[in-house]
Length: 459
Image (cartoon, rainbow, N blue to C red; front, side, top):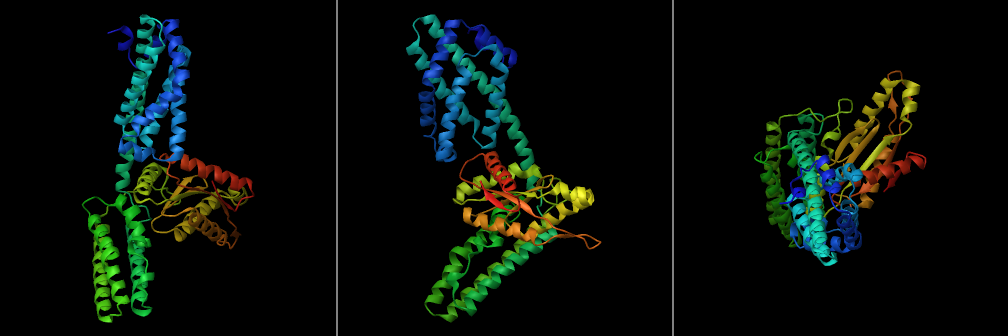
């Protein structure tokens, strides 16, 4: 085994690798990297996308286009003229790539498989291009070693990022996202009661069950799908609740519609009683889950009582996975209190704190049970708005903007402090990296502020 193959994967090791290679070898590897990068990237993804698991993650036109270009650039950066002066930047690049892979949930065995594919293709290209055996052998060893070193750096960062995500995810499992368990339970009781009332009105008064919204798409159903699964343990009864919702939507409601179309009031009444019986059991099961829930305060912003940014990666990762599974989109809103510095300067920082609490309370009163609210930082808030398309997201964001503008903060002395917000909207487009989604919303927010504030803009 040659000396270059046994060098450790740290900065000194990388430097020794690139410093000991003959110029002819460096030139050959550099030439192949620059000339063959597009073909190498295409072959890399052609083989990798044959795996169904990888295809699910990368099956998106924008992802495919961006990743192919990124792979070409990575090949050239890693292999083209790898001098000692570049080592620090090379290591930093591999760490960033490893962190991104962890963030978008690409399994690292898939990354290693890609590295194997890449090495095989590069070896073939170097073999054909070399003019003598010594240069060929040195180039192959150098290229393979650089890829191995890159994988070591990626793996280390991937492991750190994954472990951190697991710790946060575990903490989030026991976290309640409202002020307290009792309040959240009452909200869900009200949501379930509201759906029941609507169903009874459609079934018994207007005789139009076809117009009844399914329980799964009601406020209660969205809460179960998006929040309850993160709040309650696997053995808490959540699976039974999901089965009960599915039974109501897939069996009992269709049976009610058939009885209605057959103009059979006796059968319709019997089926309606079955729905009510199942809803009653569903409510009891939900109450039982809340009774078992242990509240975890960590992760809540002390001033606004909303979630802080700690759980944002966990929740966005879950929502991206769910969006892919149920083929539905979601959106995020970034809100910034307009002229917040002026509020602090004119009324003092305590009033600024009251303004933040006031906006949080208005947001809580407007958003749906299945949505998520964060204090993003300073006077900024973030909303994850689930199961919406671009049109619906724009409507909800505008409702939030108008709702905040319509409720000024009233101080103890009767002073009314007008508050408005600018909102940047980004609708999930299938890209697996949530940081890109946040960046789009952030840029849209800045455009809203530049356009005069107190408006919503979609990015």
